[in-house]
Amino acid sequence: MFDILVYLYETYYRPDACPEPAALARKLSAVGFDDVEISEALVWLTDLTEMAGGDLDFTTDGTRFYVEQEYDTLGTPAVGFIQFLESAKVLSPVQREIVIERALALDESPVSLGKLKIIVLMLLWSQGKEPDALMFDDLFGSDDEQAPRLLH
Image (cartoon, rainbow, N blue to C red):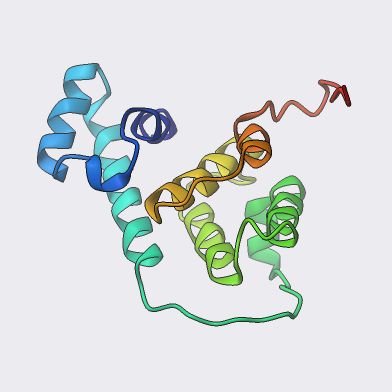
């Protein structure tokens, strides 16, 4: 499913440039993606789009506490990355909640940092927002914790 999401991000500059779901499914199938993965990706993306375009509007300066199930499913690296993005003002509290909900919708525990980065990227893409260059590098950069990060 995540290969399809990355393909959509790289192929279509904006979400409104995507064809209708039926035509998109045919195009994805023609490119070689599996029908089951296409279906999962389109449902996941439709749910993301509905949430991102919804009337959720709240602001908070408080701290987000994760319940045990959320923390277990997301894992420490993902929670830390979400907190980093929120403190860097890349994600608003509403966007944070959408990212958490979409991550919890996966059948994966803990959610890998690479997949969480794709979720964030797809949320920003679905809202027509583009991360700045440094954030883009962080979102598409390596999530290999053993690879040293160079400062120069």
